[in-house]
Amino acid sequence: MSIDNFSVESSNKPVIGIPLGDPAGIGPEIVVKALTKESIYKFIKPVVIGSRDAVDKALKICGLDSRVNDIKDVSEGFYNKNTVNLIDFEDVDVSGVVAGKVQAMGGEAAYSYIKHSVELAQKGMIDAVATTPINKESLKMAGIDCIGHTEIFAELTNTNDPLTMFEVRDLRVFFLTRHVSLKQACELVNKEKVLSYIQRCTKALELLGIKEGTMAVAGLNPHSGEHGLFGTEEVEHIEPAVREAISMGYRVEGPIGADSVFYLALKGRYNSVLSLYHDQGHIATKTLDFERTIAITVGLPFLRTSVDHGTAFDIAGTGKASETSMVEALLKAGKYALGYLKNVSK
Image (cartoon, rainbow, N blue to C red; front, top):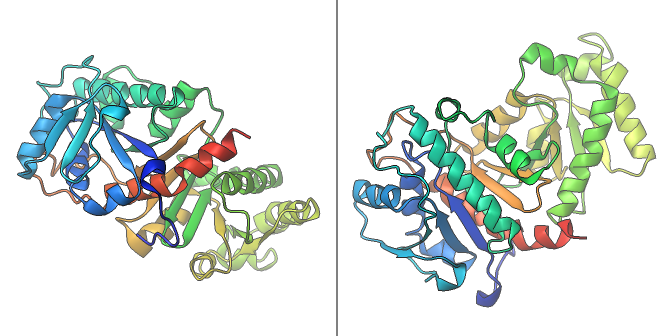
């Protein structure tokens, strides 16, 4: 990861909570692997939130001899390489979890870990949360109605529609729409929504401490519709929204053709891109660097970062999973956590 000028004095390192995710997936494995990387301790104090059984199994699977330090408070932690500082609330028995299998026990445990991480963040015991993968089917089997991490965090913190931003290298991408069909996503591109998201995304950047630069709005149609030749969404909705935002004082340009806007943002012309649908932004970021594309949830009372891959049930329990994304999620959390808390409290 490019840390830029990011550095932290030892006494001011943010405490990052790490819920283990679905214990049947690769979450526990990538966590224990990530915590062997000396580089992360220069910037953060990581605290794992989960079950001792899941951690012990992951260490064995990965062939690691890291020490597990059971703690009740973050002040009891030893924040150095090969130490897993673990807060185990002991309310979920995962001894029967089968690696690589969709099961209610996995969903129940994953939800419990998230719930406890939110409680710790709300009490000020941790400064941010870096999440590991959960499985929607396992959540459903456990009777959890939320379809994903963002929805769970929103519900537990009473946050209305938090924003998701992807960051990889120098590219930041927001999403106007997410988990809807492509047809529905196109129908949701209207002036009111685009204008609202320009305002909300600008605020999100400010919470992260990013106050300079111009946002770009991606085009929806090829070549941004060529003035109505290939679709009218740009002429009827996107351009009017951008003009109104500029008149209100927002620094924004668009629509910019989706075949070039992400490249231009990566090169520094724009501080972020508002992608109009799920895959438009996902393809751009993940093609650039799949493992280092990190999701950042903005709008919660605290910062949440996440790996952007799934539970990988096909390799869970083998020790093969790469910890690169987990390391990156921890570093991103460390980079923004304290500034975010300061800005969100204003």
